[in-house]
Image (tube, rainbow, N blue to C red; front, side, top):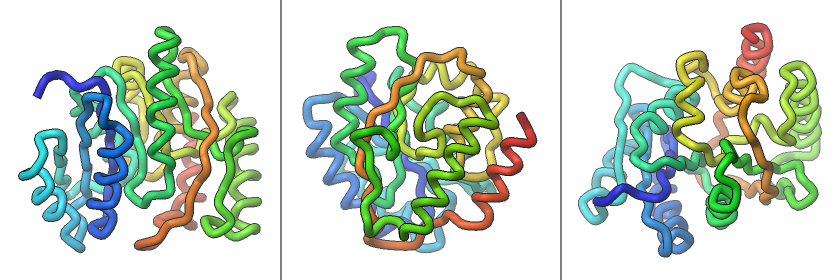
Length: 233
């Protein structure tokens, strides 16, 4: 396959029921863009990787990095971006909570602004929102408060530094990759803090949807990770 315009990195753990769904959604949205989809699976016990391998037999656009003995969403994202063939790489979850239609808007922003390094899908812009079914009111409030604290302490300008949905120039990301933590969930906040505002960023609002299959991996460990991230800067 010729060099794609866009690589999409999707870290997975126990997401076998969502693989076909997200592939169908991406195929519909990206039909006019040459692309590849890289699943990075942490040896899911539900055989997520087996589903991806079956899909690979039908499409050369689908790739798999099957990690053995390595865990952590941040590390999966970093490995996926390293392996990407395109100069522009999108990162999104497999739980269908991110709005795949925004990928077109994101890549158009890169086309219009060659100096742009990263576009961040944000829940907290004027056009962004969180589905009522995605979070309880208490959890939504907690997310907003945590975001404000992280922005202030780490001196981050983005409205949603804890987002798991973004598009970045591979070259810009790799410039700081060696200094990023490989464990935990919040690779974007780590990248923004590590780059120390030496990158050009743009936020784009999207609706954070509710998870329909599987369980959220967020919780106490995420909170502890954020504390560790603050202390490491």
